[in-house]
Amino acid sequence: MAPTPAMSHSSAFLLPSSSSAAPAGSADPAYALVVLNQRLPRFAPLLWERGKCSPADRFFAALLSSLLAVLGMCFSLPTPFSLCLSLAAQVRVCADGGANRVFDGMPELLPGQDPDVVRARYKPDVIKGDMDSVRPEVMEYYSNLGTKIVDESHDQDTTDLHKCVAFVIDNSPILDKSNLCILAIGALGGRFDHEMGNINVLHLFPNSRIILLSDDCLIFLLPRTHTHNIHIERSIEGPHCGLIPIGAPSTSTTTTGLRWNLDNTSMSFGRLISTCNIVEAENVTVISDSDLIWTISLRHHP
Amino acid sequence: MAPTPAPRPAMSHSSAFLLPSSSSVAPAGSAYALVVLNQRLPRFAPLLWDRAQVRVCADGGANRLFDGMPELLPGQDPDEVRARYKPDVIKGDMDSVRPEVMEYYSNLGTKIVDESHDQDTTDLHKCVTFVTENSLIADKSNLCILALGALGGRFDHEMGNINVLHLFPNNRIILLSDDCLIFLLPRAHTHSIHIERSIEGPHCGLIPIGVPSTSTITTGLQWNLDNTSMSFGGLISTSNMVVEEDVTVISDTDLIWTISLRHHS
Image (cartoon, rainbow over all chains, first blue to last red):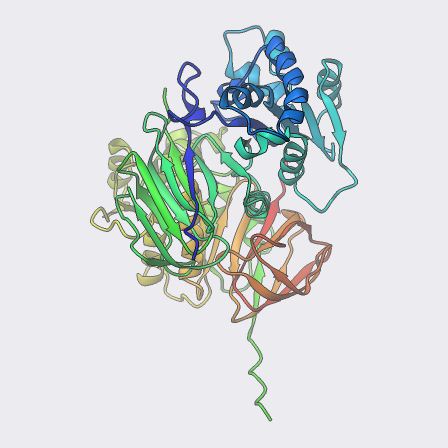
């Protein structure tokens, strides 16, 4: 039987921008940011800036990507080229009313700065969805600045997050897909059916890295197809954590690095689920026979 | 010939407890207990408080009550509000409730029950156990526990609170927030959910949390399920709409029902 492939996870993207964005030795992920229709968390400006590069970088990367798409068919690419391209892949998408939240919320989060300057700087690349929540003046403002408006009002079968995730994946350069990490804010809390629909998006795209963040915590899927190594950035996350078998019971889960580790333990709703656990080591490992949701609290700094 | 399985007993549900107090109150004989957890009070907290026979704060929920009730009733004297909205019990491990808040309510007669020795159950679990086991409510057959502050916030807390619904499937427990309410539809019953259109809906959902559902049948929804399978990774019913006054649900697994609450300006 083939050994289960390992998968590493890190919240380094939440570190202040002067820090390195990834654990040493690994390539920087390409981040995409999706903003849904809830109040922005306090770290929204930080996530927005993550992986930002200059217009010159983007031009160079675009030029390179055409050349390398050809070369890539013949050779495997050295890391520096992948890194450059991953910087250029940064995309920020607002799902419908998420555009209102950016328009109203970014100046509030950066009170020392001119609101108009803030709004122009934190301009989404795309506003996507069925357009029944975004205010007309907000849509016009961003449209005038070059934001692409993608009307999906014909598609009532998928959630806003689903539409945005599909869009980001479809529009990512091929070379970035393996390193793509989608950060979604505004997906937790609020209407419970929305939250559950958003969590289902994690299950519908098990091969994509999608992290849902709020002011209080973050969550992501640990697919059962992999063994997991979660690097804990203690300065910004923890100690409270949990492992949730939200879709199906887990017959056996084994962990290290937690205060109450699981040892071939069964978990299910109606019985034991791991909540109010505590991270104790710098790395947490998880092996399970079932998809689990990992959650960890985020530290509040005054 | 195989024996016909016994028909499942019917279970009715109603959110009438959220109607303004001048309306007819709730299915006859319902007794409400209110549990307040440690998150900002929803706007209808005073209404539910008045409905309830027993009021329990879980630890930091007492802070939320102390700070939040006067804010929700701005036309009234804060001290009078605090004295009127006094919990019967503050229960939990006491690591969040402010000392002065605990002292204030203790002086007014609130019972303080320190559970700091018990780290194995969530605050909501402790409060539900307390309400179901003690004698503050004489007739528990119609008991319905309303919990505030159990949704949103830290995700592991929310999941632990939802697990309490699964751990007490024979008790009516409803989790409420400003945006919605949720409760368990145990598979042992067929369900009839009466929709109070003035205060809830139209958005609703049926969520198979914990285990996939092979077959669910509904009536009264915009997109009804017809012997439909549901699971995470597949279809779950979200952003559905109630279109009739009563919604019926029959399923082979426990489901979580959720419906949005209307915001009145």
